[in-house]
Image 1: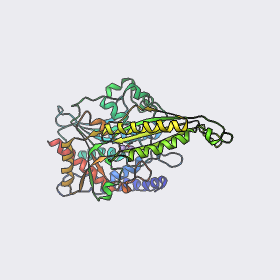
Image 2: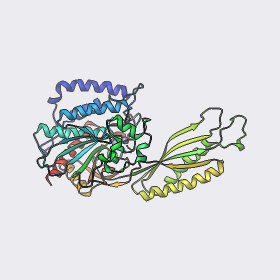
Image 3: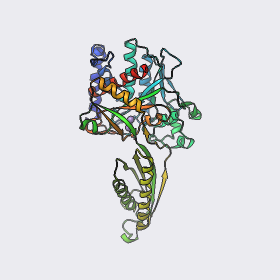
Image 4: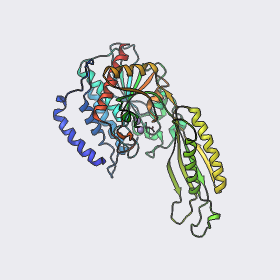
Length: 439
Ligand code: GLV
Ligand code: MN
Ligand code: MN
């Protein structure tokens, strides 16, 4: 669906809900006393989608841009109404707290992010954020007070390298703060636009033991659950992600007057390297992936041989050593390509890389038991997408709940998850929190 149509349709839904929202039934399941309001979740997904739409009607709630700032303000208003009294930490993370019966216990925290990739979809991050708020509202409406304090956390700039959660885990470095983000701002400047304070970034850090458990509900972003007709994914591990800026230097010269055998065409070398990346990744068994997703050609004219090309290379895997091994192979291939094309190829490893992370086994089991008790089919699986949870896994037991993505499409305006699946995931989140609280 085109984004404009999506938003038009969603406004109608929202208007309808304003009147009838409270009358719409929850998705109650036998055996569970509390259940989320599926319509409320869906209508909020639609409402949030209105923030950060560019002049072409595409989703552009990129971190630190106007849409992100306005979407966050909207979300914080809802948090206030739910009694969460939200604050912004030094990294720009939004944190809402709900008291528990026992103030000496550490909080159970849950949430996700609301920033998106350029021309992104409406479910990535937003589902986990809106469902976290939904859990709080259901507890409020049913006068349930948990033993543990609860925290809803909306992380800053997830799509730009899990920046907010990286700061919370204590590894956002001064170099990482200087990194340029998709918005054009350096991370430090961007964090300021969100109301954070990069000069005091250490204050966003939480220590091991500060958080009792962290949970993130998310769309799968791949097609496994849908293909296998499984309702809930229990995430076992999240891949590591490393980025390199690859610079290919040739010689810009006249495209008509320079014979083919006398060229130093940087784009030709870059093209060969892109193919080499694909071959290297496919040369070994496993689920590793490698992508060249960015390219800039200089000077960029029909009649000039490209003199310089800058590429964005990404490698992902659950095994950090494998990422290094694949990169070494790519470097070797680059050296051969550089010699044969009379170019120079250099690599600059980017700050803010994500380490592979395993989720907590006990939390995995609680998620699985909660999902089964609600009558859902489950599958233990890995996440090929990066998430704030992998940062938080370093300081707290962390786990993730996946729901199906229709067609396995994500980071695209075609991203879609069904309202029933979203409610299923939110109910599993709710029941998991209640189970963790009782243990
Ligand atoms: C984040 O969504 C990523 O996997 O890049
Ligand atoms: Mn996400
Ligand atoms: Mn994403």
